[in-house]
Image (cartoon, rainbow, N blue to C red):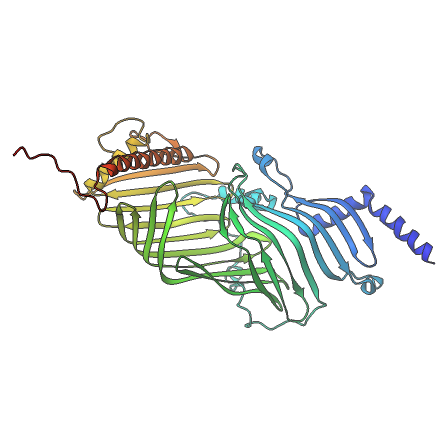
Length: 482
């Protein structure tokens, strides 16, 4: 009997390794989860369940030139524990999902890459311009359906508990990237691991990671977070992150029974911001009397066009400081932005002072296209200084008396900068006659100019320092001629 069982196990695993069975599994995954799936190998044992190795999910029907930059959404080694007793009754009940190792890569242009979302985007592009609405076939009763947004946990009747399901993650890297980017500036959550329930009676779990990076910059060090299952919601309890005196409170939940709706809330109460370096090459530091912000993101997890988000922030008494002293103090600043159907908009952004102000807005589409405007308003002294800076950094394409234009107010001048293009290649009209430069080229020229100016100033300071009397020594005065 033992030999027969062992032989049956070997034969069944050989069958699972055949291309026919793997293609059948790939089609099942595609119908259930979407994407285009590839299963490297399949095997099973009565003790460890089903093992899927080299499991990869890619976006289907990519038929445009930029598809070469799209990576697999998931690359996983997965173990699935099932209930054998339920299987004898012709029911498949999962008891445990275990990610042995994995990599998740989410492109910022995901909305425009998914076939269903591309069809909806095409419909939006065909709508009449000027904000006019196309005729709607819905009846009056259909158009007056109540709002079906997710209510906060605790305000809905709780469904009965189902058999418990546990998700265990041994190691998984989660990254966000642009298909138009070079791959050097990605947002990556390293070595995500932990375990928590997805179903069953109320229970707790945890997640931990080794850090959050953007390119080569560390944004967040390693951390452990509790995860709560309070059916039908999986919750990330409120957690506070602190940065230079400012606190950010984050809380979220996702509904795992029925429609998988989610909600994330962000809140930064008003607090002073300690002095922080803006960029190492600039030598400029910033501090503020008060910084605050609020934001939220919600929608159906599996329908990206349903995602809706809002964010607003305010800052007061922002001071920009160099070692030589204060450069400029702004009375206040604010930003308001939104996300609808994958379209991210900066509705209003401004930084105000009596001598110099910045005002702007912009939009980023799901396919990576962008457009925005930045207006500089300055008094005559600051307009002259900024013009010298633009000429020195070779942004204007040659010498010009003024980079600004007179405003209606006689003591103010204005310059509008228009940005357009894609995430990979955006241009801005910084030339004296409106000539355009790539945004990356503008940044490189500004950085080079500032570094050159700082180096020259440092050399001047070193040349002056030996001429100054040292402490404890009397200065040698020239003869008076008497």
